[in-house]
Image 1 (cartoon, helix red, strand yellow):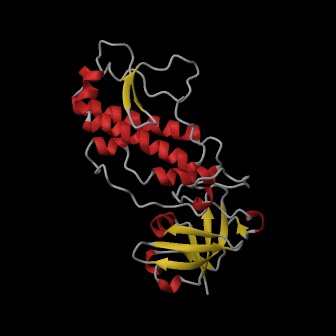
Image 2 (cartoon, helix red, strand yellow):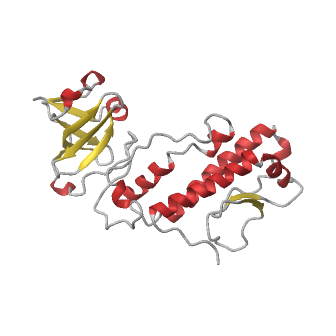
Image 3 (cartoon, helix red, strand yellow):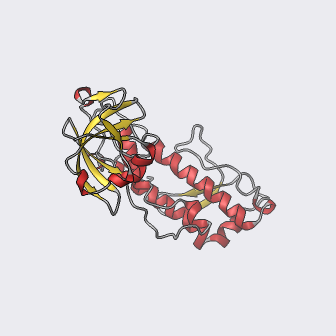
Length: 263
């Protein structure tokens, strides 16, 4: 019997990290073995990172459709036609693409908030490409931008979703208030407000009211600023519905998506 199919966000995230580590091992620690396994004289070969932590170079699955999304086909054919470094980098890029396809294959039943939470977990880690090309150390962990409802989703099936959104063009990994039907929202910001600037970022913002723009529906939502950390450029705001969201001013300010209301 094969490994259990991951169902919760924690399980899917763990599956990702194990497969990612297996691929990194193939492309770094076992690079010579991997290179030799990709004989251009053989049939179409794929690089697999398995849920048990091992990697293999093998033929694609016979069954159609396959149990899981398949890695890119025929990585061995390009091996001798490229510089080894460039070929390894190409294999790394395709490995990243495959990892994400498997991740979202398992996460297809989650709603936008669940997917945002899952991506925030995954995005803590450098890509396989970044590590293989030496751009980022293998052990680096990026600062996580956690969605406001992340803790509610971790390790659990998603609750029935109201009309919600994931990350907008600003990159904010958060969800709009679930009681948004009652949340004050407008098509344009109030004339008594002005765009927030970096000069505004201080503890003096605590207690101030503002409007936060969500690009997906083009609405401005009333919020109150509850905490500000000028060193990390992070803040916590509360919607009129009573729900909180963590913000990164380095994303909100350049996009012009917060309007600070006059006192």
